[in-house]
Length: 187
Image (tube, rainbow, N blue to C red):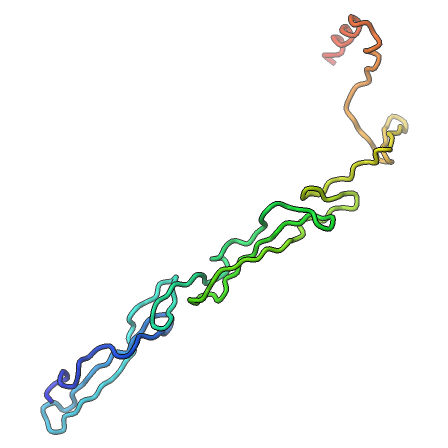
């Protein structure tokens, strides 16, 4: 044997494999020891060599770069309230959607989500939940407004209204009512 080519052809051997998230393959190098002598012999060495760098959206699986669906939960969606508020047990609830990355950073990664009814507002004792919001209870229809001094009260609470007391206009002749309205329109 006279040179390295007499021992074999350098090149990749075996199947590609994964290391550090990238594709490697063993590279075989042949060497002729003591070329041109009776004691010449061949040797070989094998060294892993980088063949392919997987992109940031890939990982290495069985010697190939394969796509990864997700590396973390935020890549699957944004958590938050969905749909309209609704009433349950006398309080306001709304569905909260949570996204999850299953098996993150692997070729078997996948996204899933779950929705849970979440309390958004607790209605007070004088409120009821209606159409997804807390509303004040309507006063008892049999209640009457009462007077104490110059103040009005309904069910013991101050009661306010806007308006004028002009019942007497309807008891007047039309011309008198018109004249009164002319006088008070600029007040």
